[in-house]
Image (cartoon, rainbow, N blue to C red; front, top):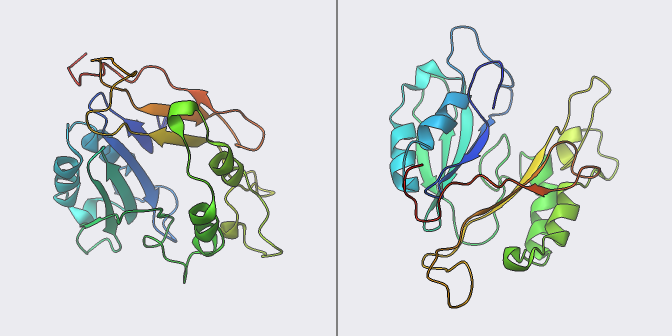
Length: 221
């Protein structure tokens, strides 16, 4: 929760819809006369389906918000939304199958994003997580990586801290179950999402499970 504006940057609801928002390059922080982008995460999480959530975000008044990137997904669909200019539209686009990276630039933009250029190939080459056996080691190691090979820009690191104190303040790993996946072999109870959260820099803080993910059947609490 954003304690200043009341919104959030990341969340998952009882239906298994995940929403995450990022500022576009050069738009860090609030803007005078603009609404908090964090409220868009709460708006998305009011929906039981990722496509419906993305449609709702695409219909917002663009001039009310500073530019942003947003990621919305459930266990069937993944969409990213780009609001590149305060006077332009909010454009939803499908996330392709496989490993993608979204930063303050466009999806998988290795031309403009130093972080994507350096780390997207590493994530693609790393062993995929196995959430069912709590095997995240390759990705958690990359999430905590601070080496940016002499590049003077912290934007080339996954995990960084500037002398001003600005830097990586938390990290999360989220896995959504396959449609129809059961909690255990032979069980009729559907599997729940897995949400692991590091409350600080992920190279020095462990990932702990966020337990309150709502009922697995998607019913209201």
